[in-house]
Image (cartoon, rainbow, N blue to C red):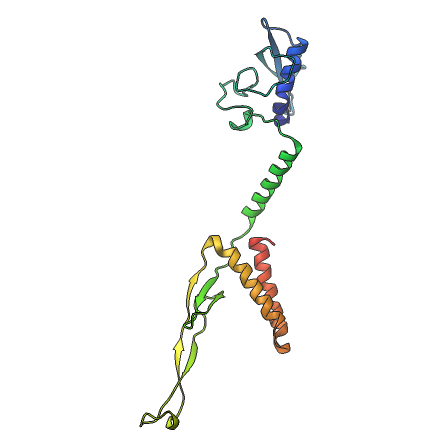
Length: 229
């Protein structure tokens, strides 16, 4: 209610100055009455407040009958605490005491942005995700900082150095190097992770389709909860 009154103040002043109502405090001046009822509702009018209301009077200079853009002056700003204004009321930059003349499109955009900001703040951060590098140079995403090691086969040779006479098998244990994805890039990485899981599900062998589908659904749920659709 208070914000609505503040947006209408320039036009109330225009009407008061043009009609000469509200009791002149001097040449070219009008008096406005700020009335607060028992329920805390605020109204601004050109007549004294009804009984049982808290009344505050504000004398302002006269204005022309042609509405003009509000300017930072005492004739267009009514501070709630009686203090001098600290900002241009046309921009509303001094908080609750300012006012802006906004059309419905601007208000709709502000409400939508505020709702989006509130929804974003309420989302939990996604779980840690890691970018890993294989020795061959391939990169991949992992939910573990230490993926299971791999054992790469080694060539064996005989005592004479001949590979054809080699006996037995040997392998080298290889561990991939991983680093955590930074916070600002986490959602983009999780979306990539979900797309890769979906591809693995689509191309899976019939024996693996069920658990691949479940893994994709789990990752997609994380993305939706922490990063939005």
